[in-house]
Image (cartoon, rainbow, N blue to C red):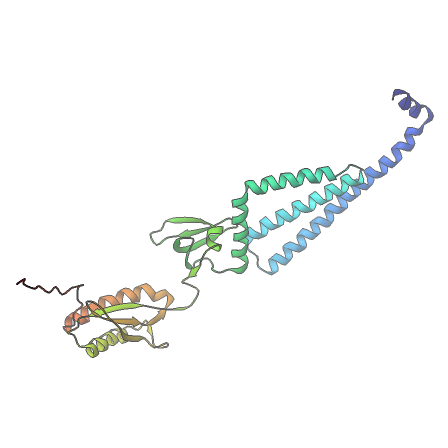
Length: 275
């Protein structure tokens, strides 16, 4: 081995050996810098497209970081290949490391994928009152990993996106109007027509109740203890709870004033004397 090295320096063949190496180094440097410039242009183009489509800032930043990192890895592998360094084993190591990281971050990746779907398809938006992931609350913030919500008693609730997107989503704010569904019972001895008219009077006296669609008041059930009316007026979504509570209160006052009873649950017990 020493004799071969001495011979290379003696006959000057080491110069011929360095020329291909220098060419490879020059090509690798060109690939790195030119590839870096092309990668920056690609990232800028993707960012411009995302801005045009108004992609969420959190998703945009995360996606651009991933794309930029992947492009850099490709450029580095191409430069190493130009130097004559075998990249097959390196790719195998990177693949194994990626698999290990993927398994370790399985839940986080699931939440990320669900967050991307929520941001793209937008089943709800900031400020909507929704029921999802076992929670009913107002949406305050949507990130790529979780959704921040605020309950009615002003508690902050953080729900993983996979729990939201993987289940049923009820968006109470999606439509501009909502129907109030009430069940109001009267006694069997009360006047059905009079009770219906009194309920309609209460409905017509509330200006927040919409006339189109028309409100419905109908006898729906002959219950065990009462005759049950369904009361279904339509209101603007913002007025839903206020109208519901107001109707219940005013129907009770009106029934009391006109002698209509709202019976308690009751049973008839028949007693027989043994012979």
